[in-house]
Image (cartoon, rainbow, N blue to C red):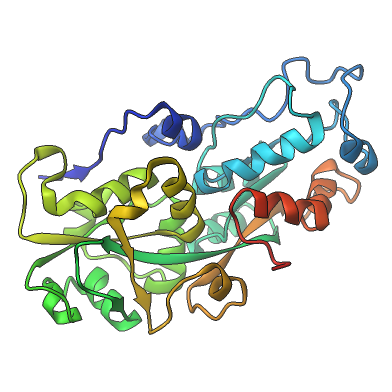
Length: 330
């Protein structure tokens, strides 16, 4: 019987930040509003930055993205409309659904990790060419409980775990004699797209993992990995530690809000510890990027292209750093 692991967090701050507890068909619809209620009203006063870019309330682009980039979407909105504007975006459609919205022409731009092979194929089948513009550095990281003495993991070991379920005890990784529980994400998440791209090479994950240890939310992954050995919601301790994966800057942001990082250990990957510096200079093997993605048929004068110019400029880089993300100007 399928057992989907999901923790219910009660923090209103988390719900506001992540807004990613919806699942199924609801997540395939556009849920992020990036324009104020009086959208189209030329009387709205825009910021100096918006005026310089030629962005008005009438032509402000439709922007969506992943859970992990919602803070960037919000920062763009503040930079163009000002801090006190109405219609502030509070939700993201998530990675794969937002790609589909872009492919279908329902949004102008999305801020996301790189697309999975499946998404790229969908775009090709639809006759859509996507443009990818780097805006921030990111890294896929592997995590376990801070109580776990294991310090590192290799590409070969991760593939053996998630593709063949071939490692089931932490002692095989130099850790304690405890069961290894591999948690995975749902297929439309950004971290899962990176797992597919960087680790699995789009090979199918072992069905026992997909069927029994799927976590539907990013914050739920952190909670499950941190506390699985203590029984999670069941409260019944187990002789195990969980293994999971997430995005580096997302973990840093969540730690500032909830302190979850005190309960988690980031594992070195192939001998390299993921740090902001190692990710920024691509020394960390699983360093990746966040992208502003548009359709290549978007007109050259479209406001979405102006937003990309701002994101890749000095002001955009400073904004990204202030959000706790890693800019390419470090």
